[in-house]
Length: 111
Image (cartoon, rainbow, N blue to C red; front, side, top):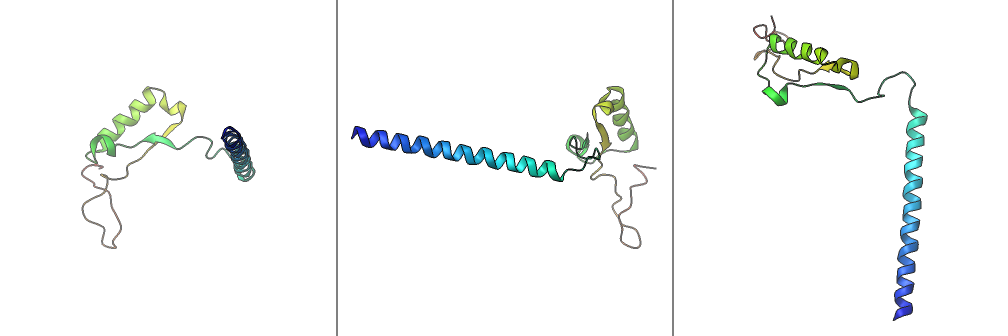
């Protein structure tokens, strides 16, 4: 029984070593591939950083609110850290579309 247990332990140890080696090889390969295809143009060096008011006010905002929050980002120096976007994913559009069917902004909220 003891020799069987030693055999199983050795087998599991070698199997884990083998899997670790392949995982490390795969991670290095993926890293090298992504480096090889990356352009050196400054795009994507950091994630797109900005602020989205949807989660805090659920689309219930207007031009004054947006300007105040952009000013706060600048006042706190976050623009120098990469926060250069203000994402208005909803709440900016009017309830109705234009005559040709495209979205239009709510000119009451954003004159």
